[in-house]
Image 1 (tube, one colour):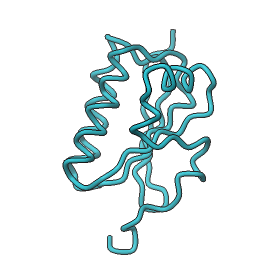
Image 2: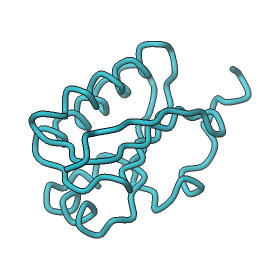
Image 3: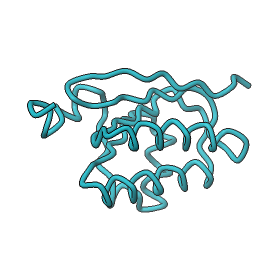
Amino acid sequence: MEPLRIERYDEDGWIVLRVVGEVDVATAPVLRQALVEAQYEGRRHIALDLDGVEFLDSFGLGVIVGGLKRAGNHDGEVVIVCSRSRLLHVFEVTRLQEIVRIAASLGDHGPAPDRDRR
């Protein structure tokens, strides 16, 4: 099993967190920390790229929901970037796709609405 890695970079006014590995009870805190750091440094638009995720359990889903709540409280947004059918099925079964925008690729999430004001 590959340890969880999170790569972070800026693209079109978004902070992109590219997640690679498994997000489970042991690694979810690493994802939570990366998400919280990005959100509390004042960046409101975060793309969470999950195409490198092999496994996502309920702890990982909880981290995503927590990030969505924080974003909503600060007039921000979190977009999930994912084309993996297994993960998309998890979002459908849990109905998470009803509360978060899911894009098939990084180019599909579009520029951040306030990128020109930064």
